[in-house]
Image 1: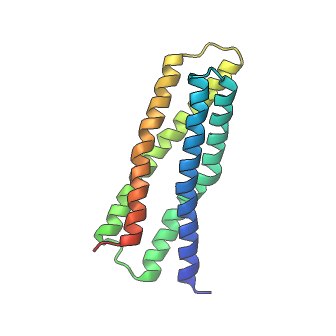
Image 2 (image 1 turned 90 degrees about the vertical axis):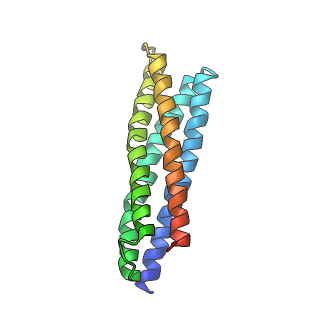
Length: 159
């Protein structure tokens, strides 16, 4: 098998996992938080937060590591100028997504811990919990937009 096609396949699969898992777990987390905040179902919110954090570590983290590695390999194998403007924009957008994702993971873990504490009968700062959730929600949008733009750049390779 051709090395370029193998690396490209890995790159496409990891991009799909990164984007698809990101959307899927964001939806799952959002619905769990809705059940917790609006419906008072702390168990559902804790389950969603716990599962989301696990999925982020298994899928998003690994795909996020594979993406730049396979991307740089493709740049080399295809003979692209690594400083071509569309690639530099891709690097910047990927970095933006990472800069949003890192605090999102931290927030997910704090939110998960708050729901667990609430289930255990501990006093939880509801205002802090909701503020963390709002930050989580807000940081998801630039990360999502950045990945959409990266996908476009990978397809269009504007020049």
